[in-house]
Image 1: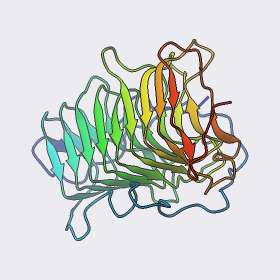
Image 2: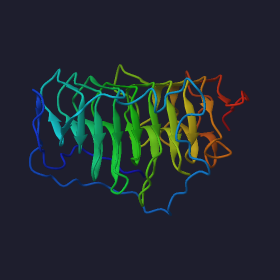
Image 3: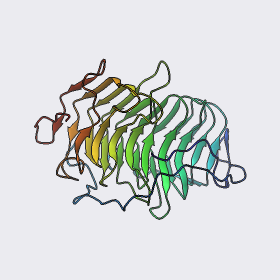
Image 4: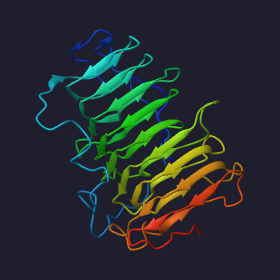
Length: 307
């Protein structure tokens, strides 16, 4: 069982930056059910520092624009709907407790804690664009972006040096570079992950991202049934590499996945010879209603077929 966060506020806020942004209040210690300790994870033989081909999201076309001067800040708590955070360098985290918040051209230097950016339960409409979220490599930052609310859009974002890159059940993740996680004892490490079905009337779209897990577990893209049967997910046009399996495709003990579309993705052997340390894809329901596997290949053009 993987470890998840329930809805906590961490740290001591340092500055008030924008209308609707506050320093967080007194520190509240998080409680989390940790997974069993596991043996130290291994890294692949050739962890890529950038995508192997032109055109994929990578360090040159994701994250904060080069040359942009950023204002420095401590942790930020957003409480006013419609707030825009633009051009900020945050040491700590951003907690969103409002609707239709936009974070752009912002760098989040995660410290010890559970997230870089969090949209809390009951909130909707967060957009994170042209930003970078990463841990310090010494103390665990559990999630780059954690969505406990409804819709979220993540676009041209660089997420790295964290335990888990992006966790959401619904929304759009596109044109982003999610890569090079940091392993800490007991981690189950995924770059883009979902742990159950999307909210009613929504779907999850993972489109045209570079997703590289340089460890031997768990996945690059992982669709898990921890909290319900997976459905209504499109994984399209991504570059996927590493982890135990590069793609966990939604099957599980809770029921048959449905409307899972895996289309035109490229699986890479640059991290592990089999794509992931065990293989390219697992947990695929070939007979799930509406499920579609089409046009998925290795980098050399050979077809990838789920086992």
